[in-house]
Image (cartoon, rainbow, N blue to C red; front, top):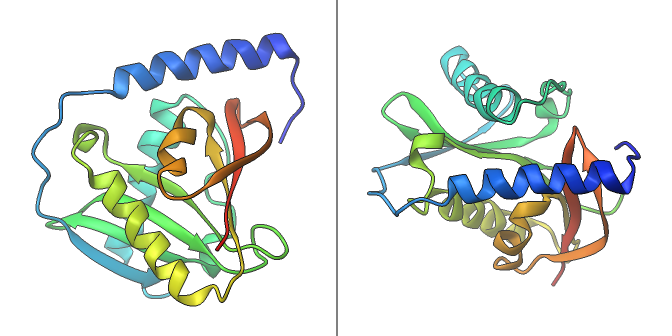
Length: 180
């Protein structure tokens, strides 16, 4: 996390708002997706390549943010891949208790291939991740760092914003928590 001036935050919010409105598309046909859970050691070389390719195409190239996507947390996470054939088209990682922040489970790197946004695939992905976390978290809350323009999306899953927005990797974010 970095500290930026209000002007820089405002500029970043404007850029993300414009990006958000570009992503609003007429709903398309949702493809038939196979959902695959994997530990880090359970990834095939092909699956790992597909996951990293998808994450890079969105988080680094599309969002124009050079940041260290490979952050050593992947080794500890449970990974959910949405596949069409051999291609990973949706992905998220579930972060174990205390890894993201003491006392919290988390998830992140939530991504859907650009051409499949607006199909409901992102909602399906997040719903599956939350359903799994709800089975294992034994009352521990889930805390995420949401891109600010996705605040309402995560609110639909019971997350509540906490604190002020902040800049993370040049993009406005907000902390959100889902408790029982």
